[in-house]
Structure formats: structure tokens, C-alpha cells
Length: 314
Image (tube, rainbow, N blue to C red; front, side, top):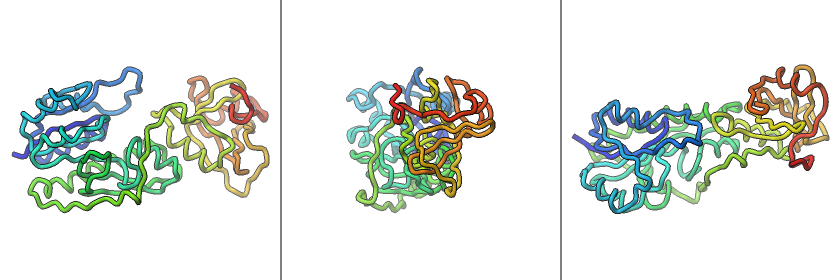
């Protein structure tokens, strides 16, 4: 029976481990993370899946210590898989298995190597992304590609919408690739890293909206970091506003007053830096969810300055 050690976390980890089990892979160990109490845990638990299937679980603070590498090597597994595991695995760890180490990445490599690729793809206005199964090497997300599958990004999709599509693509990609990996007939292709870029992680403060930017760019930021991610934030009337859903106003409506919020009885319209407008369809004010009509009632009819970037307020 083909065996594997699996490093995994998150819903993609659960989905891909489930694919391995359906293919009869003997998973000798699942390595995952302790949930961070400071993080909103909205995703599925790899640890719970492993326990439910009587698979041993390890949660090392550092998987790259000589002691843990020796523990993995002693299992004498055929494959090592990494599915949304959050730490880099050193070459010494990758070399503990007989038939190679493979990672599932949430983009169409070589594009969007690195951290939070789905969020970055939406921020940059991409119309598609996907999942890529690739060989693991020392450099992150740089190994040969085994297989990949694309998914569309629609104009109003948020990050969770796209994440769900990418999860399905990851399952399909792994299911398709496993038979050839197991029988040794897989044909991999090298990446041309010059055709892609590496992106780092994001922090909540990276979601502060600069209303001098274009309406399209602001719309992309809002949907890229919408809940369950930390959200796109601004200030209005001294209140913290997290914009959770927006809609572009048709381009024939223009203005010359960026950084202002125009509130009527039923509409909340942000005036952006390129002369275009953005409807604030859903938002949270001091943590309270509001639809557009509720937000209009809370703010009151008027025209108000938006954000520290424009009006100089802290």
C-alpha cells in the first residue's frame, strides 16, 4: 500500500486528505497546527478529520528540528504532501520520503507564489486563478508542476467565494494526479518563474482604504479582504467602518470630489479618486452589521468626509 506523511491545515487540508483516503493512501502521520486563539477559525479542522480516521497527529512548533525530522524519517513513507500547511519545510525534511514531496498551492503557478494567493489575485483584479499541485523544493512554490486547474473570478466574487472554488479545484487536481503519482508515470513540467511573482502575507492594517485610489481598485480590495478576513476599513463621522460588500456605479456617473460619502435615505455612495463612485452595499459600524438602508439610517442624510487618508483625522 502506498503511504504518506501529510502536513496540512484549513479546509483545503481537510479536502485533500479526504482525497488521499478515498484513493487508499496509508497516511502514517498528519502534521498540523494548533488553532490560534487570536484568529477567527472559520475553516474545517484537519486534526478532527485525522482523529476521526484514527490517524496519528503531531503539532510541532517547528517541524524542521533534527528530532522531528528523524521521527518522520522513521516512518519510511513513500510520499510527503503539504496542503495549506503554514510553515516552510526544509530540504532535510522533504528528503525523508522515498518518492517525493508535493504541495497544493492556491494559484495558477508560477503566478502568485507565496502567501495568501487568492486575496492577492482579487486585489489585482484577476479574472481567474486556480489550484496547482507541484513538487516541493527549497525555494517556495518553485518546484515542477504536476497538475493544475483554473477557476473563474467573477467581478463581485469575494475571497470566500473564490476560496470555495479553489478548494474544489484542489480536490479535482489531486484526484486526477494521484494515479500517475502512485504508478510512477507522472510527467511534470518546470516553472518559468520569470512569468510569475512572489507575494508576501497581509496584515489587517493593509485593509485601510485609500479613497484617492480608483473605484475598481477599492472594490477589489473590499472583496479581497471581506469576512471572514479582517475587512477593508475606513472612518466616517468618527466611527470605524468596515466595508464588507460594494458595487461599482456605472462609469457614466462621475464626480469631482474624492474622499466623500454621499448618503441619501436609501443609498450610500463613496466618491473615489478616479471620478467614479462605489455603492457601500454592506458594512459593519463598530462591529454591527448593516445593509445599505440600515447604514444610511445610522449615518443620516448628508455628505461626509471619509478616512484619515483624505481628511487628516486619526
